[in-house]
Length: 63
Image 1 (tube, rainbow, N blue to C red):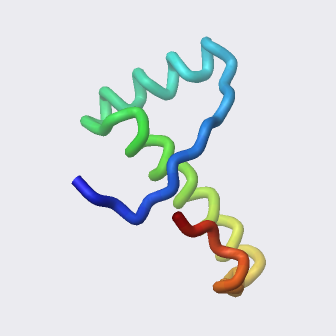
Image 2 (cartoon, one colour; image 1 turned 120 degrees about the vertical axis):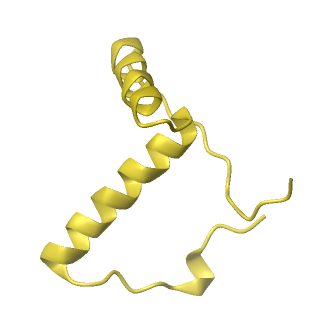
């Protein structure tokens, strides 16, 4: 399946990764989907407090 999502490598302490995996399973999400959801929540919270983050198309990561 083709996707426009960018693959990254993130380092986690084993215990934290395990716990996020448990949360993901409880939410019926894959680990990747759970991490993406958490990142979206983080950005929304930041933007709610600080205003929208402008997007500079020249700085977006592209394949």
